[in-house]
Length: 122
Image (cartoon, rainbow, N blue to C red; front, top):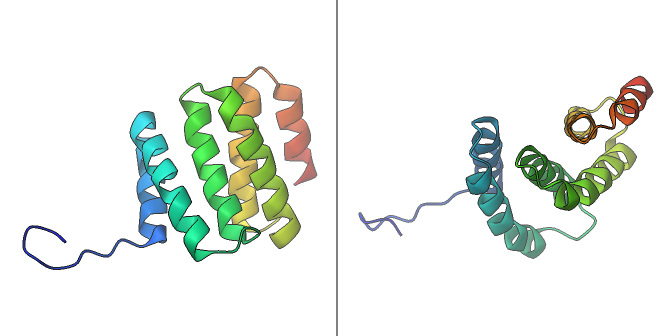
């Protein structure tokens, strides 16, 4: 409850949007903390193989990558992209966003060839 006594309901979509905005603003530590808080909510609300887990993993991995935490980011980004690609195909906006995140990670880690290869597959 907030100080006024009314219940404030924040949806996962709103939290996702907040995390994206924090990442884009360069507030990586805050974004990462938010994505870590979202994980238990996802597990409680969605089956493990639900696509929303992949979408959040891509956003979380993107924040980690932009923060320079590459070792943590890579498995999230790779798995998220593969899961969304399998579920929605290459042209879906969720897959395309995950692809952008993975490509940015590849470029940031000196793996531009892998980023280009991924881009060509789209």
